[in-house]
Image (cartoon, rainbow, N blue to C red; front, side):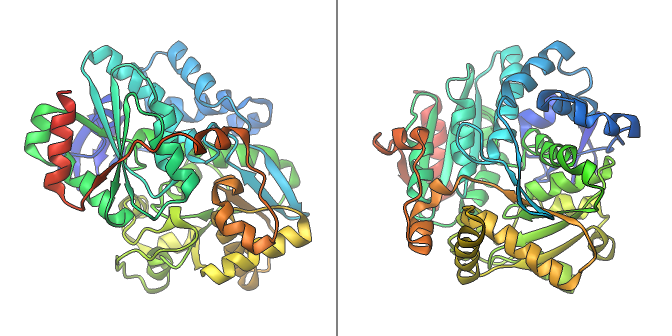
Length: 435
């Protein structure tokens, strides 16, 4: 399969070229030229397949012969070696827990697959690959751990100083080796802008082989379709229409879900945002107005100009009316987020992290306007222990700290400060490439 740029449909690349480039030369994001439909016979057999087998079924059409079948089998087995369970909350609401991977966040799924695929391509090119990534929280730790000590790859992570949780920061700044972290004096949108500038800079392209590990990279986006197929696998026997409520920041997760729908998944979608609600506003007004991001307690969703919105527009030919048939959008304030965390903990003895709580509140808003029977699935994107400083004052109890998190809290922070200045980032990248 080939991939085209959202800025130029005539620009076509192979999967390998698109993955290794990250961002198109014209600044666009890569999209597959077609979305294959899974045969109904294959969909009906999903309940009999393991997670790696579902992954291979869904991803094989996009990969074709660029990765040998035996290599893809190994990649899927190693990348998706943890459970993604659907936990019953009520009779008609389930929580899809996406945080059972190594860094306790949903981004382990995409990051681990991408690291394996890039490692395979880098090994064949015999040239050092620099992975440059911006993070609003969990992407950084997932990428850091996914690429840690992968031969032929070095990782540079930009994160907004003072705007990620302490646990998140420790996870992405304490590894060292081939992983470097830069704390930027600015917002996530500032970090993302710096990354995009790097990809179109002529000097950097001449001296470095640069790629991205954000969801702007197609290798991060494609495996996120698995969430929805694995959830479907667990609820298809219920016989109810499915509605996914997706906590959304940069909108890669939701884009992947809507791509899965195009492949044959029967479901509706909710774009659940915090106060950074530019996409719900678009769905309501038909006009997209990016703005400066606001700081909230669901920090991984603090994005005022989501990169993947251009992919959503591509999926729907820039027609908001068509998009509205498949998705609705709702916003949740910090106070409402705290209320949901306390309410669910008290009534169901279940602990949401702030992002999952946003997803649950959006589902409740959806149900207030659409009472038709359905099964609601809230995506829980991170373990609550990663946000203990937010949650503990709300539930008036300690959040158990898992051992894998406790281990990193006592390690030295190895990050370096960076002004919100592209010239400074460029100098760092060029200098570090020669050391």
